[in-house]
Amino acid sequence: MNQEKIGKFIATCRKEQNLTQEQLAEKLGITYKAVSKWECGKGLPDASIMMELCKILKITVNDLLSGEKVDKEHYQKKLEQNIIDTIDYTDKKVSEKNKSIAMIIMIAGLGLTFIAFTIFPSESSWVSIYSVIGLVISLIGFSKINKKKSYLKRILYNFLYVTVFIIALLIIDYSNVVLNKVPPRFSYLKETGDTMIVYKAPFYNVYRINRNTKNEYYIIDTKRQYTEKTIPITPFNRDKSGIENIIQYKNQYVGNNSNDSHLIDSLPLAEYGYVFEIDSKNLGLTIDYHITDWYVNESHYLEKSLLYNSVSIFALIDNVEQITFNFSGNAYTVSRKQMDELYPNFEDIIGNETNQNNFNKYLENKMNDNDFVEDIFNKIFAN
Image (cartoon, rainbow, N blue to C red; front, top):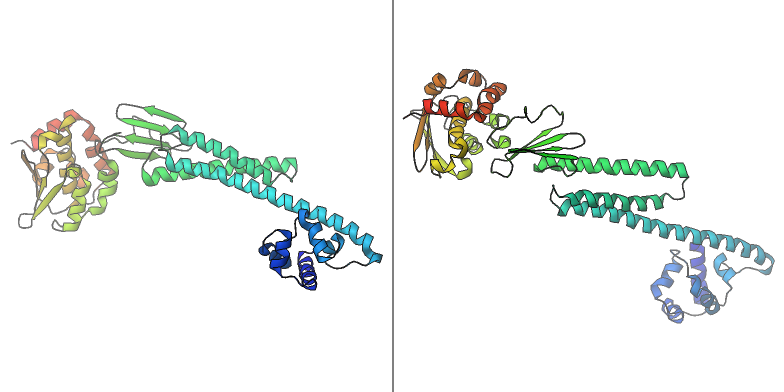
């Protein structure tokens, strides 16, 4: 069925009856845009008004569907062909309509899953529930799109669609965990301990350490190389204060204010606010914290922070010789010589180049040993 030919035929017949598009539309009770659409070959009149249109244009339905006036000799043949073309056209329109509905259903399912990711927090079970509902809805739409294919092909396509859908959800979830440091939405097991929560996802584990504290941090174990006993645990925010981050601030000279500021800002106690001063003559560094020392000493947090900060600064600023930590209550001063003499394995940590493995082994891990911290702190910072 040639829509363009039929459209031109309607325009010719309309002009023969001295009618404008607006006048023809008014007689049919439709808008002139519909008439314009027919004449441009972008659509056909509905069956409900086809008889009335032919009466106005003084043609037969057979003429209309043929796109020309049919002579008596070819009338029957054209009629049969037009019937077949009309059935094909109707089937095509119905198929297009069904496909559009199927696409809407599929998009609605995908949209529901997206909204669930956006609205609900990571640990909410509603994310998984609505994601499954969204998958089912979108699969219904996808199945409708492919319903004319063979049974085996439909089964295969549906399986592939579900597989891709699930993989996409897992990738999005993993990306969210890595970028935003949040629990995975699709963990199949959650184990809660005193200081950490372990989330076991299909292809990785996530350790949430120091949960619900200022120093909460996440370790994403894609190789499943850790257990709760071997996972690196520190009382500080490891993402911020760990050697893997602060190593970037290594510098030969104290006095590089930008570098020194970034280093101090990454270390424990910076969360309470501070200012610092450089003593270029004596190669000293003074940090004034905006907090009272006893206020932050629950579970030896002050002692652990001062030891960690001292070793870190001496390891990463090569020529600094003395550090003073001032609080509204007390001041604590330590020299590089004291640290070298009194802190075990200090030389192994700093070396010629800061050794990250030794740093974690002899400093970070030691911060979990309260007896060690108390003993070394009293030796180094004894009045």
